[in-house]
Length: 586
Image (cartoon, one colour):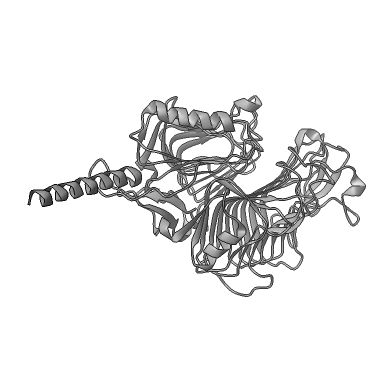
């Protein structure tokens, strides 16, 4: 009997020891005794911050990442910093390829009491190259009272609550930014920010404007629509939108991706009255991809099994195309995850199906030319996806800059009813592998589908038309574009007998199209004698007539270097040395 009791006690001790090991390894019990599950394996470049961590530890982690990424414009490292619900007394500076994400159901569940900041100290205050970063789902209390977010393209703010002010420059130029679903308690000061899109947001007051400021579905815009003095384009409602999917955690430690619901004729912030409308998809339904081990083959295998894909931070050098074929698939990237078309194939194709959500991905061309980097649907499709459209959120494209690269087209949209929400398509004008005969790329965006809607579209430096729109019923809210800087001479850049290629080309066959807040610029640095005949070409585009396609247009000759002769189809004065900024009323 004593021997039996001894063995029983030993078994109990062994079981207890195993349980304690499991608790340590998998965090089965939290401090409050509630059961938790294992943290998903997001890899080394996803940093998860917990409110129980000492302030100094958190600050060291953040500062070390920023020190590495502050000026690392074309580097290989990528980071996502995830904050669990709680309060953090830290200042978070955000460098290249760094994404801050709160894991709460609403922004107010994660408070950064100290501030979030993107500055341009690395470039003497010039923020025109502050790209590829972001912050979302966070409550920010800036210790100075003002949050600085001095950025240009591919640096979105989403689902923030800023308890103070925001300034959008760093005492010099910044050029292009995006904000959605955000509440700013006090003032937004645009400073020397050249152009900006705010969608479905609210603030106390707005101060400043330069070239092209667009406001869609915002609450409390006090300045009204007075374009061109100031150049503010204001539309009361957002016609159709789905907010970007985002990662969350519940009070038991379970991870989900929340997919906001589609909304029509919306305005204002979605989360002010609590959790937004939408669905939570468990992380168990995702294949968590890692650049160090995954290929197109492993990702396509997961897609074939019905998995969604979560790309952890890194550069995925693909020797084949990722093929998304199932309706309602979610493709979510963390930390500016980058898909590179390494062997001349498309990096990704999306079939002509309902409801695919693609978010947080940078598509990078490789040295071998790709016909297209991302293609959606099949050309000539007649299928309507109006009830459940495919949507793209914070999706960016790059041809050159990080190395030799070529791609005929960056993004081709063949499906109908696609929604774009913050897109930047860039043929690099600086960095490695850059030159008129080096990073070859014909067009940035080609739209063949009908009823495609894009909020925040930037397309720059491609060698022919920047944007070609062949589908009917298209709508664009905010457009930013620059002609290629590196045109060697006029004879090298002729569209038949016409000087240059318009930035925004609507096909002659199109009968319905609308665009608001258009900014198109030139800087022919290689040869300032180069001219672009028309910034925009479109049928039935006469200004001031009912049904006009284009509203609130601006052309700029940057520093008077080169000329845009007309704004649209022979209308509008020349932007050149004499008149650097030209605005044409709606």
